[in-house]
Image (cartoon, rainbow, N blue to C red; front, side, top):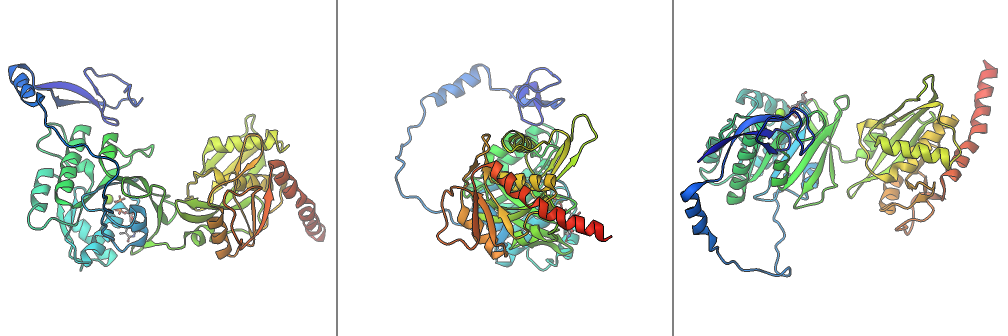
Length: 474
Ligand code: TYD
Ligand code: MG
């Protein structure tokens, strides 16, 4: 086979004939590396090969209607993990799991392997990063040394496939990590995009032919992308990311893509001294340690997939000494904050141009829902006015550019969760998309952002009076 030298972008897989500083496909800088890729077979031999194929095979076309089978599943028994995969692993599927180093990917997968192995399944854990002794040490710490998991430290894909093909195919094979794998069929250095893609292809073929569920661990780059070719993400059946803040103990498993299940589900874990523990009631965790009397905090009744989740949104609005005031946000979209601030100024009559604004989602969670607008606005107004909000109230609603509060989906589930956690009042949009039959909370609707400003500002004289009496007493 003829080989032509080529430069391949290590982040998106685009190929170039010359080196250049910037990849035009993904706009990455300094991502091209020289690799050799197989050129199409040229000359008489190639033409003969192509000629032989040109007739083509006729295959049957079918309609959309027909008998379809529900994908069978292998549940691991770890409820938070099964929720994210959509009820268990689908035989023959390939899952890519990404996450920062040290977040707990190997720990989670060791626990999943042990759980499946204890149920009597053949399970293999192939580590390309750690020696067998290191993996054993972790298993010891997790108290899982008795589980019949087959363990190896290997990096050659052909060897791995040959070993796993012996005897009955395993139910689950974990490859930790795909970046350390190399295939002798691919002529490129280990770790390069071509190797990663080639190895992934072989492992996916193995999964499809044997019905083994293969989990590939992928590294994440600085900006949160799964390193190596994005093409691996396209090749696999499911992509899940394992997120968390190194300063916090809990971790969130989130499905980014799933051919066999929902993509907006999350699983919540807590990293303990003995591995990852499931968190069945995450709202209680995210609301723990709340300061009930401080201004600038509001509780948002959110949804993650089908699961309601209550989180505290904290805001700090303080006079600025800078020409251009600071705007900083953790756990929320910065452009969304700019929009809410603009609406508060233009439609709510607030003056924020001379104030620094900080917004934080407590506990290290990331919120993507527009429904959090109302809670964020309430926290901002409360901080500016110095008026604490009632600690037994939850907020949800989307804010439009006109200042109108727009309805959001799944109101009954949000209210039910808030009721369960002891909240008694909810500030909601004037119209609810699906209004609950009987709300466990007193509902108070706001139609416009100006109404919210007025309600919260009305709390101020009362708070100020309490403060003044404190000062004169002293
Ligand atoms: P690890 O699973 O090795 O992370 P990854 O594979 O994503 O790189 O987990 C590493 C971290 O988890 C490490 O900093 C130690 C911590 N840890 C615990 O806190 N408790 C435990 O029981 C285990 C096994 C690890
Ligand atoms: Mg690891």
